Image 1 (cartoon, rainbow, N blue to C red):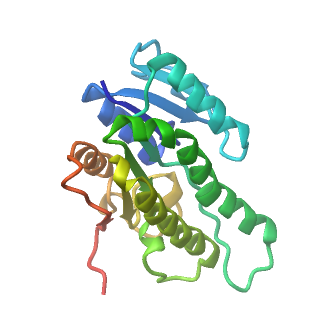
Image 2: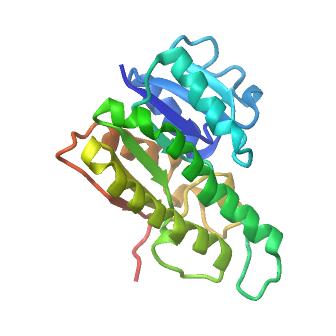
Length: 228
């Protein structure tokens, strides 16, 4: 049995990851802001699934979520940090509230959640942390300074997690996609069908989860076009 926590599991990439993994017989602990968003899904009344009302900005929420997961399953083998936000904050903008919000959701929230789950990942011996970072955490092509800065920080956090957990069998992979056909990409002047599809990102994540400790992949860049 493998138990995986997934934040942001009610839509976008997080939802597709959950749908992929439930088909592969994983046990899932799904963190969602509004559990009713999953009504009618395959996860409802499934004994292999825990749905938890997770609020990324609440410091107590990851503590309660991890405890609920251990109470139900007795172990945690992986954490997939999918929850994130996009704010179009540019360098010239004077909006400290938006900047703080980006930092809170995109950096501090996965830091808190993963730290809480870390002791159980160590116990697993093959603990897996997969962080949805973004290509915006690798390079800056546009002018969205706030979002890009938060994603660069998330990549640094991923590398720090790797260094801390390595000797205990914890492997950390940063997934860095460009535009993916989700709600976050709405408004972008691109054909949605030309973008990377969230279910394809989910397949990549599934592959990473299945690798042994001796086949570690630190970063995966995913794109739908040629970067120049």
